[in-house]
Image (cartoon, rainbow, N blue to C red; front, side, top):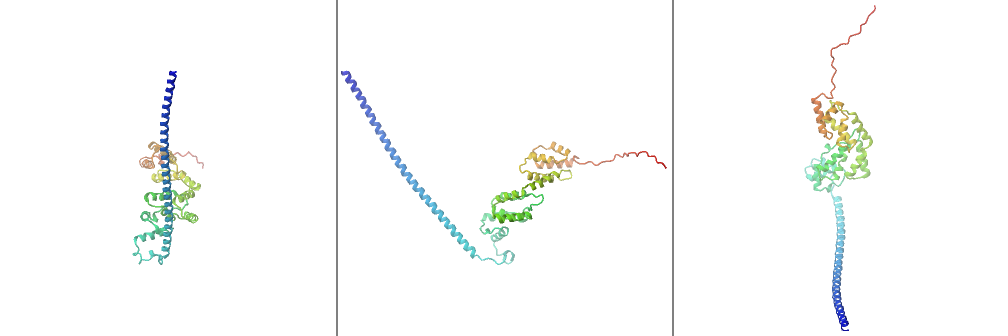
Length: 325
């Protein structure tokens, strides 16, 4: 009996210890729950403050945009009033020699720009645009393009593209404003019709329309036929011949590689001269190397030159004829 009582007391002691551990665990969980509730409250408060600040920022942006739009409208109104009140000179100021000395350099530049351009907003040029305008080539040095015969419209395209490289501050406004100077004849008529139909466009648009118009089948045929018929001979200038034929090949196939270009050029040479050039140049040689080699062969050898016929002095005997009287 006493042994059973001892076991019961021992079990009750273990239960009390487990109960104490459960109390401690419950207290820890309550503490963690309170900490989480406190963190959640702080996060909610921070989220509310963030939303309030974002709303204030959005409202400020809206007010700033509205104020900016109002300012632009006021400036446009003032500019309209200013241009309407600005006195207009009688006649052309540039034609009057008595007033040319009174014009400032900037005003002279503005008048020159308006005379070259077909647009009417030259008064709004920035300083960088004025400096870029000074670096543009004169009208007389621009390539002229008519769109007839064996024309090369890629030259005009490359010339305008070179403006963006030589004058980085140049804009589409001034590059397209001088297109009317480059066109003449049928091309000028086409340009005028396109401008009247589509208005002001940037250079990318004009370039696509330009290539679409003149890179047609007729133009490719007009390049292919002269290339096939313009065979090389030693009496031709090698540099001029290579340059002209290579431009025709690039016009026929803009994606042609160096090996194919050299192969097509070799097919235009006489047999002996073609063999001599193959022995001296590789497949990837440059156009200058081909020209220099042809020039060297022409000056130092007789390859490709027709040898004149020389008589050996032998005379064929006339057949014996018997004449009857």
